[in-house]
Structure formats: structure tokens, C-alpha cells
Image (cartoon, rainbow over all chains, first blue to last red; front, side, top):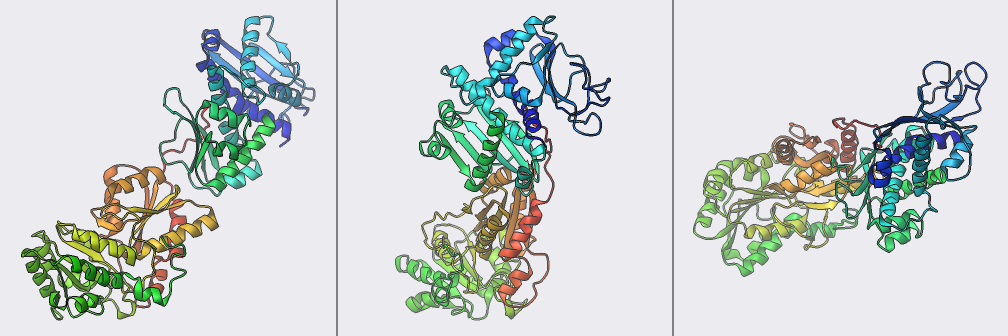
Length: 292
Length: 338
């Protein structure tokens, strides 16, 4: 798969869903969205020809009827347009990797690379459709997009809430990205997951407590993967990354200290296989390279 | 624990470190400090290594002749008057020929007779089925009041013999023929009756073993780590009764797959004791038992028999691979949580 296309799909499936974290845990964001019921589409042209020849019109379904299925080619090859549909229902967000049926607001990019550039925190101007009709929705959407940039390494929040959000969002995204990367068929990741029996790679930030604590896991079994939230209770983790605190996690995630140094200084402890934790770390580095 | 786990084993070790030899030595030590200790056998003084005790305390040693029922009956009588008898004979005779005396004379009265059963399992190899003993754990664990211990090697036998002194009731200690490679290299690793010893940690599967199976299971765990990248926990379940429920429950919840390894019929021994705990827990767990599959063993050298019945490291590794493929999990939801 083309690297930009792969990156876009990782953003759709691993980064966009993380918007749920500020929507739930950031009081100002929650208040802004709690009464919003709307559909927002992010889309980009891939450069591949559409079903009928010319590229589809902005905001229109790819082939004139229902939106194309996830990743489905427009005319037997690569899809002409890719996108993600964000549905807000009284502030509750669901994300699907497909074009919306009738979006209230569309942010459309001329190329996948341009969209990725913006999502990586760079500069790229999309075309807006529905902005005049829904100006407040546009403002709120851009604000929500800004919240995603909290995950970028250059972003070093000082206040505790934003630090908490950054660590939580980063761990949510990285575990989902690992799972999606495998599901999208990366050959190296597949070769890594396939021989493994049922295993849990658990991440927790101490002190962990069920309601507001930060805990995520990646489950691997015979080539299948799943990103999960909380502590997996059905078996002991094969590898357990235990961050000493939000601050400790920040230092490691922001690469203020190298991972090994983080272990030495007590910011993170690893229980379980050192070989597999190093291999997982390598995949995390690959994904970080793609997404930031 | 020995780093080589058997690979550095020599003939010298056989003479000094095996369960049988250490039993004889420790018994002699115990009797130096406790005048209640007496030793009995049924014409197997040398074979069961109680000869060490006989040499040092001939006045407290009693050879009952080839009469195992009498051996157990006399031991019960001695216990009744305040002595602590150690009765040594082959496992096949202790558990089957003298079963009624062990049950009625010793266990029923909860008397502190310590039965040291040597040449257990198929360790008597070429002597054949009459001298093999693959039923004793099933028999002994069904006798009320009885404590059943299967040490992994000579060092653990020393711990078990010493611990048996403090148990107020009967104890059955099951050991081999005297050619078992050492597993532990020191005695202070934390032996406690009724508490399994975790000798290799892992999360993919737990092997619960006893006796010679412990060393083989650890060899298998190392092999599986090197060849398959698998993480296998090994528990030395030296005490079959009372079984360590806590260690089994942890294995169920933490690894979800359990294989038992014993030099015994798969019916009634360690595997059955572990299965009881799994069933009573109500938790899901893939489970298999390695042992003699309800057959009388072939006759041959013990090492050949262990390999034939899959009780050596390679056999255990193959069973682990097979058990890991068993599908039982309810948790088959693979949608990412977002």
C-alpha cells in the first residue's frame, strides 16, 4: 500500500477516534459539543480515476449512489477518494472509515498527502463545504482538530489536565495504530503477530484506577490484534509497560529521555519479555514516524 | 536451581545427590537429634538407601523381611507409642501390596508414619510392570489424613523428609530409583509443604509438574522459548495433597492453559488433582495431562520410556504446542476499542 494512503488510513482509524478522549475528559470541549448532532466528513482525492472517469464532485458519493465501502476501489483499482465520517450525536462521536451519506460539513483535500500534512500538524488548506451553513460546527471541528495536535511530540503542555489528555490520547492512538497497522496487512507486523499465541501487551500509568486511570492494551493472537481500553483481566500480560506517573509517561513519550534511560530513572518499568517489548517498541517507532 | 538442569549430571552426582541417597543421609541426621526416629524396611535396606541409617543407628533399625503388610502394621504400632517411623520400600509394594495396612492401620488412626516409596513410576524400567508403579498417587491421595509429596530431586527430598517430621499425620514421599539428575543446587529455595514452587515464569501456558517431570518441563520451557518464542510457566507441584489451589487458580487466570506432567497414570494423580481445582473454579481453561494414558507401561530403560510416553523435554514441548492450538476462549471480539 502507498505510504500516504496507509498513513491516511491510520489517521482515520487510529487518530480520529481519539477525539473521544477530549470530548469526554476536557470539560470545555464536552460543553461545546454536548448538544451537537451533526456529520463531518474528511476526504481526499487519491489521484486514481473515478468510476465514471472524472473525479467525483466534492461531498458527493464516489459513484453516484451510496458511499463506497471502506477502501473499495472506484473502478476496480484504488479508490478515487478516501474519507472518514465523524458522526456526532449529542456530543457522542462515532468514526467510520468511509465517505458520509450527506455530511453537514466537509473538509476536502486535493491530495492524500495534503490531508496527512495537516493532520501531522503542518499547513494545508482544505476546501470547506457546508461551512457557511454551519459556521459554528466548523469552529468546533477545527478546535477538535487542534486537540488532536496535543499528541504531537512538539506539544509540551504544562497544566495537569492537558498532560493527562496528552498521555491518554497518545496511548489510545498508539495501541489502535498498532492493531490497525496489522489489520491493514503490513508484512513485517503480520510476521510478528502470526506466530504469537494469545498475548497481552498492557500499558498502565500509575496510580491506575478504573474510572479515570489510563490503561490500554494490545491483544495479539495468531495474527489477529485488538486494541483495548483498561486492564485486560482474562490473562496476565505477556509484557507490561508500567509508567510511574503521567509526568513519567510524558518524559518517555516526548522522548525527553530515551526508553532505556526512562527505565533506569524509574519513569517506566517493563515486566515480561525484553525481546518482545523491544520489538513492539520498534513498531511504535515506525508508526510514530508515519503519524508525526 | 542447577543452571545445567541435568546437562552437568555425572556418575558422582548419582552417588551423592539423588533422592534415594539423600533420603538415607537426612534420615541419619534427623535421628541424631531426635530419638523418636526409627527406620524400617522390608528386605530393601540397600535398594532404598536406608542402609545409611542402619549403619549409624543399628539399634533403631528394623528389617521386617519380605513382608510389606507387616512393615506398615509394625510402623503403625511404633507410631502409636510415640515413635516416628520411616518405612522404606518400593512404591509398588508400599502403595498396593500394603494398601490396606496403610489405610486402616496408619491413615485411619492418623499416625505419623512416614512412608518413603522408592523406584516409583517406571524408574525401575527393565524390571517390568510388576515393579513399575504408576498408580500410587491415585491410591495415596484418596486416603484421608495422608500428605503426598513427590520431590523433584534429591535436594527437595531432603526438604521433604525434614518437613515430614513436623507433620503430625502420615506422609507418603515418592522418589525414584537413584539415578535422577539434580535440579536444585541448594536447599534454601523456599520449600513448603502444600506450596508449589515457580521454577520458570511465563504467560502463554503453565506446565504443572512433579518429580522428574519438573526438570524436563523446565528444559521444555527453555526449548520453547528459544525455538518458538513461547513464554511457559513451570510450577513444581511437589505436594500432590494438599494441593496448592492458589497457584493453580493463578495459573488459570494468568495463563489460561495448563498442562500437567507426571510419571503416573493420567487417571487419579497430579493431573486429576489439578483438574479438580480447575473444575471447581468454574473458570475456562484449556487443559491436558501428560503421563501414562491408562496403560501399563512398556518395559525398557526409563529414559526410553519417558521419551516414548512424551514425558521428556521434547515430548512436553510438543504437547505445549498442541495445547496452545486448542480454541476455547469466549473472548473472540477483535474490533478495536476506540
